Image (cartoon, rainbow, N blue to C red; front, side):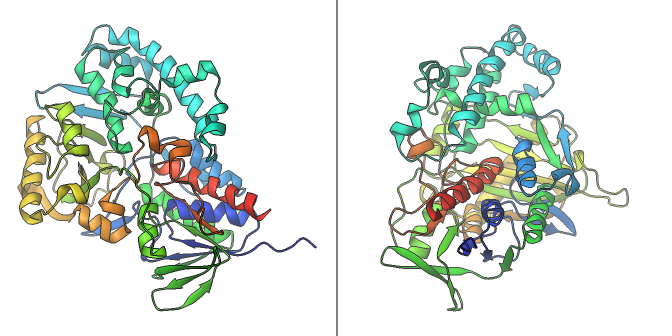
Length: 490
């Protein structure tokens, strides 16, 4: 008879932890998950306010095939668990001077919209899509799926033509400027850098694949919200026999003689763990669970989020809207390198009821506002009540400037999460909302690996390890760490 595989203890039921647990269970391991909070999802969680459900973090999906592949690996179909709906237009940008740009995954609509800001942009679009598409395919075929900690072996797989395609020597903004001239087009497409914790003026050119991914493959909304997808994945995991224990905080990872042997819960219970997969934010796991200094990582921004129950939706808002500041370059500098609350603020607004209207008996709607801010160490001391009032007013003023008659009196209920709240709820390092940044020296083999070099049997999954941030990448992170475990067990 084949030897039974060792049990795996997964610390955290975030999306990465769930994905890792599913792949490890499919490989034959018994799996138990211990989650400190009362629900799965980590940052992609659920908030109830006045009886209405809010996604706490991500509000839309890209790269839907990655989620389909997760279910397919378990012999199931995603569509039997949750319905994904295409969002059109994908995203709308507003500037303080009144200009607007609406992006679409439909090529003709997008070309016409770009041409309204730059007459030649429609003609340049096809060249951009071809170039960024080549970057996208290179990343997904040769870079993102690889778990190779050696830089030499990692980059040896690239041919000279592929090195040229990657454009690592040119910034993302400069790469976009090869195709477009309008500051509005450049700023809109460059703004995707923010959620990687970088600036389009500093991130390498290969990251033009980010706007391409949404323009070519669309944005998607799970019926019932992103948390409906999390719940579906949790159901998939339980159906495979994975045990999930909520309200069970792991306080320590125990190791001796260079090997993990147990995890200790907050109540002192010790659970044998020949293999432990940690879904806590990686830089935070080292001091909290191992008593060791964290790896030095540049982190992505923190966020402040407003959850509003409103009397009605602002007229001009679609599902997915970004308000950019007047001084774009300064905004990135202040966000990533400045101190205190930036003077130039971008923010994102989601109006999920545009995509999935509430029942007619419901007379109110939901608005979610996300404002990127510097990490906690860069913010320093903040008077949060005063700052929240000022940021709320800033959002309302920008809505009014974009043509809305929406007023503060129409906010019927509010909950606010500051960067400190996010950090406390989900053990986020320095309050960073998206994990380790994607600087050139924090991608691929330079990113924190998904295994411990000091403690055998200890592995990591999530946004701060490979391949990176965002829901699709975190799902892939679970698959990669399961493959790593299997390679070591064999």
